[in-house]
Image (cartoon, rainbow, N blue to C red):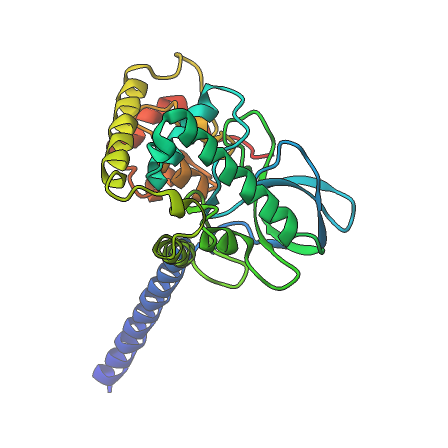
Amino acid sequence: MLFLRTYLRYRLALDGMIRRFLTTCVVVAACFCASERGYASTPLNRLVGCTLVSADWADGDSFLVRTAGGDEHTVRLYGADCIEWHIGDESDARRLREQRRYFGITKAGGSPQESIRIAKEFGEAAAKEVTKLLQQPFTLFTAYADARGDGKYKRIYGFVVTSEGLDLAEVLVQKGLARAYGVSRETYHGMTREEYRERLKDLELLAAKNNEGVWSKTIWTNLPSERQQQREDDREISMATGNAPLLSGETLNPNLAARDELMRLPGIGETLANRIIEGRPYETLDGLLRVSGIGEATLSEISQFLSVKSTE
């Protein structure tokens, strides 16, 4: 009888330990999946009845929006990147060159000047397409994430759905007026960040096959070498940045810094800067380790230039 009581107490204790262990596993797995799917991100706000506000600086992926309540926001689309056509400084010019190389059009028209003119025309065409698509009130989904590309202008990331239920970024990419590129996140209809990014890539491939928009000017035999040249330039810039880090004592907040500011960190190029923005918010610097491409060595190198403070 004593043996039976001892055995039962042992089994009850063991069962309790197993239940606690399994519960912990489930919680950890759920947190991991949530992080992978982007559930850890701030929830999206659904703003219906938004209208487009005319602005001479607007382009296809960045424009001024007025909400039904009268608030105005400069919105930067998730996942799509239209060609720059307002070139105000050297940074804009470099980005235009990078975009021309991506589409394989740096030799279009027979000269750099003509290639630039053609590219800008498609940038303007994208802006006009947005104006046409957003003539009627539309819906904006946003978590008010800071979308400053160069730190000069206050912008927020968002998804825009037209009055006809079309995803604006998808339309622009499918028409060949934007490339599938840039910051993304879990969508308003539950698609994961990676799923949305891959969908845009598929639409981009379809646009290229059909010679839509910018792709109609692509010189396909030149495209591989043009993209290779851009990759080499990116690596050179990354090395230069690593040799010229931020000044001693100068720090950035990874929750607030603009893309171009993050690219001042040693070894951080545009791709990693975008991934850092996608992974926000970070409660500690160790949170950066969940960013693909940032390991212990990279974090150790850049942590002296980072400080996580209030995101207000």
